[in-house]
Length: 226
Image 1: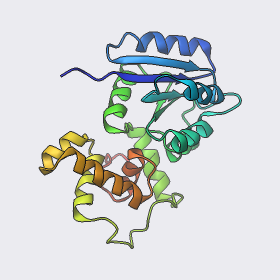
Image 2: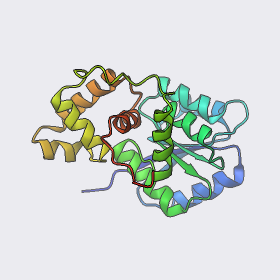
Image 3: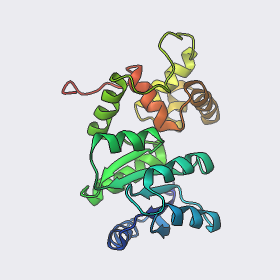
Image 4: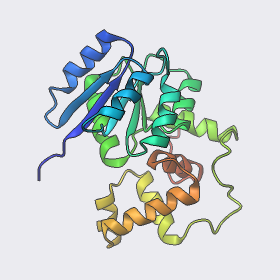
């Protein structure tokens, strides 16, 4: 079975960084760079005229005209099928929290190794999200601080069906749609239907939002060090 081509766009105001990451990623057989943008406004303009939309956008945070957070908000509304991976020099909790909250599927620092970047892109494409332990810890701390009001209360015990809970737990444990289908002896299309219901019921923007919901419900086991 052929590996699917992953179409990638890069949005960053640093020309040297764009050139460097583009050079690295074009050497990966299943990666295709569809375009580069120098800021969020440029990204949105290029999406309007692109002959082929990207599957993944590597998004810088601090950019002129339109920054990464605002750009991600717009993408979630107008191009919800496009997954955003934040790639930035900023590692503060507030930056990470803001990007995850607006729907970013992953968060990487610019000093991350090329191998990790490649792995993250593949994981986000297949599973819809990829958070390392540090990001998971920050998400968890943010939930504990009770600042995440968009997740429904635990008081509604009947929110999800038994099957939906099973599928949510498998999503949180990074199973793909096909793997979930095989494990539960149902069709991939049925899995997709349950996932769409989960998105509606939990008011999540994407699979990454479901994972955050799963953290709150303790469906993801965090390291004892957390």
